[in-house]
Structures are given as structure tokens and as C-alpha cells.
Image 1 (cartoon, rainbow, N blue to C red):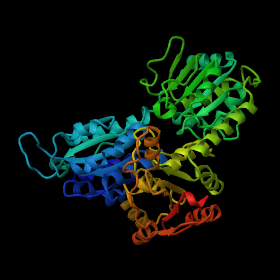
Image 2 (cartoon, rainbow, N blue to C red):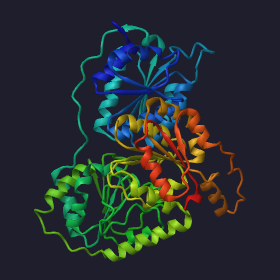
Image 3 (cartoon, rainbow, N blue to C red):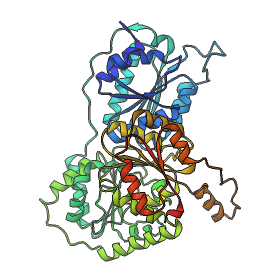
Image 4 (cartoon, rainbow, N blue to C red):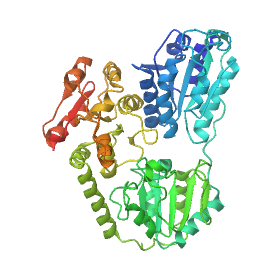
Length: 527
């Protein structure tokens, strides 16, 4: 018989987990007893926050749950930022943490905190303590089952130290997994009827509609609909689609576009504050909302339609049903007007964020189509996400809702591990890189050919601009940066500072074929 700590690794392996991210400590060493025997690959992070971000990046790239092993107390708390980000962006991350056996009657123990499971509940879908081996196995199965059958959000499993050390029977064989809820045939017919009856339908594709990327352009053509994507939905609609407005929902004047629509179909998106940066999209007609999360479907107006189910699967069904009903419709939207609007928004971004559009377009020109990009909270990403049309859905990942600095580097490491031999890239600002910079050591250890693009304007540019707009004298927005090239080389990474856009393109191309990570420093002077 193995210890429960070892059996947890075996149970995860039997349920399809291949990689675990984490840092061993005196309280969770039993989790590491069974790693190699079970055949799990462990990636050593430099900080538990990085371990959580790596698990997040791995999950986004692979479509499978990301798992991290954490120690009691501070180790788990260090990872809570990453778990909060996974909750905000609907990412399946399972955190397995050790915990103390008794906290009410004893004080002063190593890593003791008041309420570890309660802390986890503030950033996770659920946070539970297993008080028996059977409970530990059941909670693992519950987490993995919910990842597959509902909106994926992080779960936290806490296991007392003495229980991890206990010799136990193996976990039962994995059960049968279920899938996402599907839209009924009758409900699909109602959606099709409403779309075909509309004069100016407008589709909004969110990240939850990625499963329908193969047919999205066909559905738009057959219905004559115009479209937007959220940032997370980029790549679902090809960038050159004639009636596609792009990912500029946050532009204030996009409300004028919504006002022209007599039907808005929102697929797999919350249309939240971080999508719109206003309270309402701007439409006055009917809205159809399609989502697997019933909470997203609440609060609709009279006459709107709530459809609970997988938006991607619904798009596939529509692509089959609509041709049987009608020929392609002549759109009432004007393709030339759409192109003019996109050009106007591009000009706005160039004015607001000088140099970023030119650099983004130079990078896009040489970025491989199958590259997966992870960006951080940085002005460069804010501007690039509006003008960089992605050739594939689900290939640009960003800390959208929670908005955590330090996300991109460790998440890109997780994404690289999930897709060995395929291109992965990180985009960060000079300040955000310092949050999780030590994880560069992990990328070096793994020999990942990871380009790390650092936009260095030597200040907190977004905060400075916000202060100026608020008529506040810029304060505490400039920090002394290290010598990035020397620092990267000290970790064992390659480093380069291109002096032109052409040199930047060459550096990015070379970094994808290097034998380790390459830090590429970009400054506004490169334009």
C-alpha cells in the first residue's frame, strides 16, 4: 500500500493528467513520493504564483486541466492570485495543497493560517478539505468531472498532512465523463428563425464559442450578419471577413454599431465590463444570449432569449440547419462602411498609443500561424489586441478579468510544456516582468525556445496616462529598471535588443529556433 500522497499522483495519472507544476516543501513531500512512479512530469516553479500561472497556461494550451501541488499556508496563498485569474477567465486548474490537521486547538504551527479552505473559496469555484482517502479521490473526480461538464473554473483540494502520510488503498477506476450541456433542437430552431427574420443581425463571439470557429464564417455569410469578437474570441472569425468589425468592442463608438442592429446574438461571452468598458452594448433590439453558465443568462430584458448550452456546438448545428432553410442572404450591412470603421478605430489606437500598432504589425507579419501567445497587463498588449487579427481561435491568452501582472512568462512556460515543438511566445511590459521574473530560470532549465518580448518604456505607462486624464500629477510611475539583457544572460537565457523593426522580426524568428528562451527588449525608439 502506498501513502495517500503517492496515490493522489497515481489517481491523477489514471485520469489523464500528464504534468504537475509546483514546489516541494516539508508539508507536501508525500505528494512527491509517487510522482515518478506514476509517470507524471513535474515542472519546478520559482514561486507558487508562477506554478499556478503555469498550470493556467498549460490548461489553456492543451484543453486539459492544469494541476499544481502547493504547500500549506503561504504556499497556497502565494498561488491564490493565479487561481483568481483562472476563475475570472474560466480555466480548469486544480490546486492540490497540504493543510494542517488541527488549527482550532493548536496555535503557532508552521505555515498556520486562520482558514486555508475559506481563503481558497474566495478565488476558486470551490475549496474543500478531504478528511478521508475516499473523500480525496471523490473530490478529484468531482473537479475533473465539473471541468468537462460545466464552465471550467479552478478548484482547490486541501489534504491534511497526516492523511497524506497514511497508507491507503488505491483510488477506484475513473468513472465515465460527461460533456457540456447542449442546446435542444427546438431551441436551436428558435435561434435560427430569429436570425433569419432579422434585417441586420450582429453576432458577438466570445471565448466560449471557440468550438464553432470552423463554421463561424459560414454562418455569418449565410445569415448576412456582421460580427465582433471579444478579445478572448479573436480568431473565431477570419480577420478579412467583409462584415467583421474585429475586437474593438471597447471603442466607445462601437455602441453606434450595436444601435444599427435589430438583433444581437452573443455567443459564449459575458459582455462584461472588461469586454465593453461601458454598462450596455448599445443595442435597442432583441438579444439572444448563448452560454453554458446560467448566471450569464440572468438579467436579460423582456423579449430577449436565453439559451443554455455550448455555443460552439450550436454554431455547428446552425451551419447545417440554415442551408436547408434558405439561400445565402444579401447583407444589409455595408462592407465598405465596416472597413472605414475599422480604419478609424486603428487610427484612434495609433494616436492613443504611439508606436505600438507599427510594432504589433511587424511582429504579426512573421509570427507563425500556429504560435500561441501569452500577454501580460501592459500597454503593448492593450493596443495589439485591437489590431492583431489572429489566424486561429484560442491562440492568444491574456489575464482579462482579474488583470494580474506577472501572468505572461509563467503561463507561456506552461503553454510551451503543453505543446512541445510548437511555437509559443510571451509579451510583457517592463514592470510586469519583474513580478515573476525568477521563472525565467524554469524556462532555461527546460530548454524552451521561448521568445520573451518585453515592451520597455521605463515606466508604468498606463497608470501615468490614467493620472494625467484624471488631472493628477504623475506620481510613483517610474522605477529604475535592471539591465534586462545582462539579467537574462545571468539566468542562462539569450538576450537581444533590436534597433529596427526588421531586426525585431529577425530576432523573433531566431528565438523560435533557439535552444532556450530569448529575452527581446523593445523600446518605443524602435519605431
